[in-house]
Length: 130
Image 1: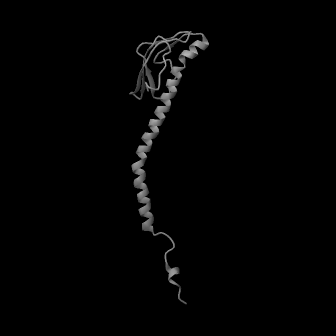
Image 2: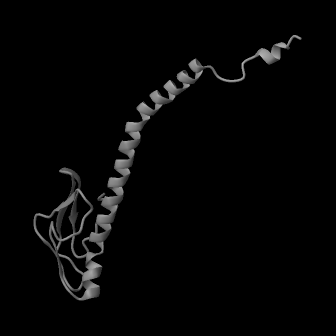
Image 3: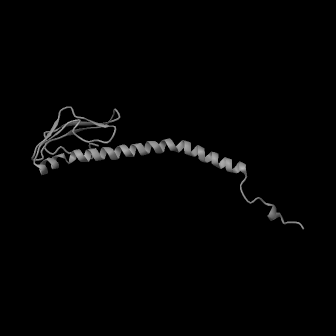
């Protein structure tokens, strides 16, 4: 008994076709992966910087609420790993919440990420400064 032609047609992919598809996926992955890693690092750095800026913006309020003055120096803040603050002259926040002003540089792994000037009396880092 003879079988029909439709029964003789292949019902899957050949090994060569699978290898070609796997090769294409590997090439596309190799091209896009470094960009995704850079994007992740960039977003991660931005989130960490936003958290640090938020903490500094709250120093005046914390000083006012606690009734104690606060001195911002490069080592006075708890920072995420790899971050440092460079504060040439310590910035004084009085118990009233006012600040005398100064400048701060935000550095991650020896690379300057942001430099801002804090203007008295509130010493807030604005979105325009970032």
